[in-house]
Image 1 (cartoon, rainbow, N blue to C red):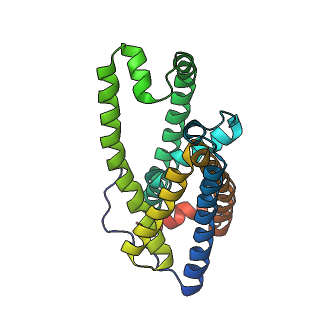
Image 2 (cartoon, rainbow, N blue to C red):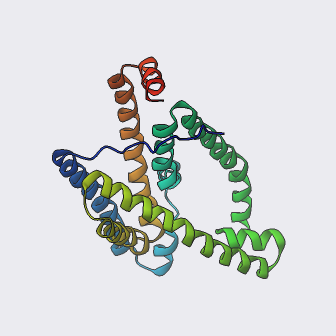
Length: 234
């Protein structure tokens, strides 16, 4: 259990210089992602190539894409909020989630290869092969549509909230802008465009995350100083 929060932790307001730099960097980041999707859409010569690509995306790009997919609005911003609000106790959840994700990949990776050999490439198709029932496949597809709609609401809310808090732009405008850019590189790019866009994002997360994390610890004076600051804030 996390300790109760007595009062909401205030979020610092961005300065004009910080807001401008953030807006420019995020815009470049999203435009590159959209550009990758558009490029691969124009490169696809058939519907099958658009849908599944050339099946030549290697393990490095796939791993980076998986990392970016896992770094959803809740994972990257929600966990940061937990750490910001609760301190070290909130940070423990991040490590636990990493262990759970790696364990699931290790267990399910081999099984997914076996199902792929039987012609199952999606979760509903895996359910059909596993239970030998098209009804189960249909129910799995319907459940995924419903759950992913709810999931997407949280992702768009997170993107719009972060854009607004870091740049000061109106929340509704931030929501529309991020939604349009995501639709471009997801719907237009197809599988290959989505995977390579996510691989680019995963590489950025990897480099920036390590640099920013290490720099933040040194800037704060080390773990001991961080613990003292958290204790003083309570």
